Length: 51
Image 1 (cartoon, rainbow, N blue to C red):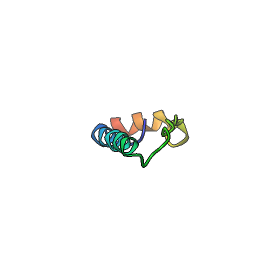
Image 2: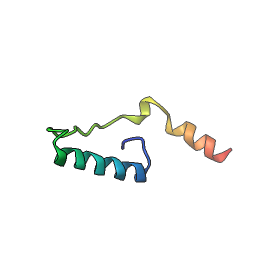
Image 3: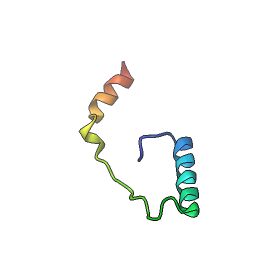
Image 4: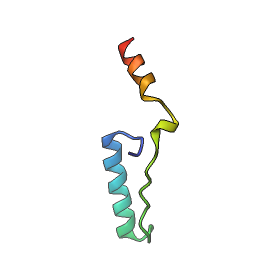
């Protein structure tokens, strides 16, 4: 859950992998988990779809 589309996520993973191989990122990039309920409520999304 990065907030980007699947295509961009794949390209980002490739770029990070290449940067690790090249040595510009000498450490693992942490994976972050977000609580998306802080930004939207599922009830609001359902109402928007039904309108």
